[in-house]
Structures are given as structure tokens and as C-alpha cells.
Length: 99
Image 1 (spheres, rainbow, N blue to C red):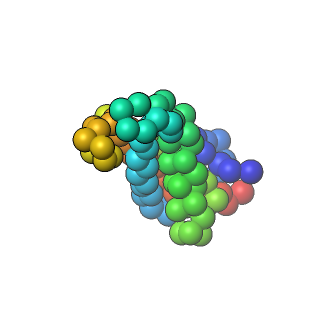
Image 2 (image 1 turned 90 degrees about the vertical axis):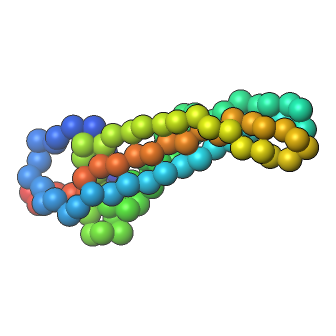
């Protein structure tokens, strides 16, 4: 089971270091002149999974004190069409439980 927490946990653990990840998403549907919906929830889920994967790669089994930030920007996707880009940045502390 993935151990992800936005605060501390009630288990003994060893701190391994800071992990971070970034995900960018453009509209899921549309085309020239048609904007689609932004997959906001999916972006948060993907950045959370990337944080967990980074913890596993460093020998850990979880991430605590997870935080997120986001921004909206725009990108030219062709056809003289500027569309929104949703970017999510996530960070946390990689840990290994010891108990």
C-alpha cells in the first residue's frame, strides 16, 4: 500500500530526503478552435504517483509532508490556437518506515 501523507505519521521512520515532481496537462478534447476540459484531478494523481515512485527509487516506502502548487499558463498548440496548460508541482519528504 502506498504511504502518502500531507502531514506526519504515527509510525517510526527514517528520513531519506526531499522528492519533487512536475506534471503539465493540456485540454483532453478539442482541436483547432475547440478547447476541451483540463484533466486537473488526473494531474494531481499523476504527480502524487511520481512522488511515491521517487521515494521507492531512493529506497523508501512512503512520502510525508506532501505539498502541492499549481499554475495556469498557455501554449500554442497549432492552428493559431492558444490553449490553457495546467501545471502541478508536488514535493514531500521520502521516508522508510522502521517499525
